[in-house]
Amino acid sequence: MSITKQIKDHIAKLFFGGVSVPRGLYESSEYFRMYGAIHFKYDKTEDCIVAKSSNFKWGTIITEGKDEKELDRNIKDAILTAFEIPSSYSKEASIARVGSRKNNQEYAIAK
Image (cartoon, rainbow, N blue to C red; front, side, top):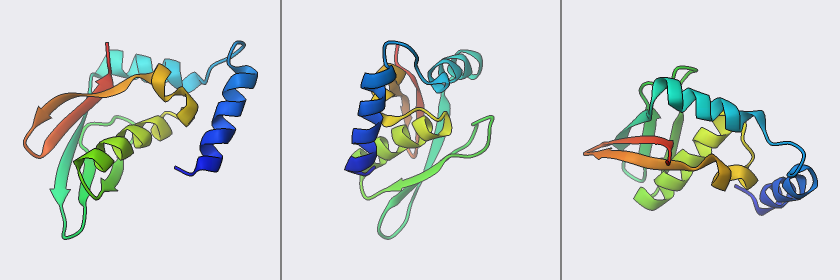
């Protein structure tokens, strides 16, 4: 994510933070409460790892990364994007990896 977008999101949070929060925070909370974690299947290609959601009720989330660390960061960002949550609210969203199996991962709200 570009530094310009992050700065813009943080300025908006400072300006509106005390008055309103993105609706996506509530929607993501309700989604994970009702449906549980989002499962991702990993496929390794020659130059990256591709993650594809297998049980997201509102479509499919697909992202990639050069390594596990970058992929984890990109999955969290893709989930925030799916719920239309600005990056400045990533801490409040508390998206975290909650399960781990070989070539499969689960992400939900950390409790």
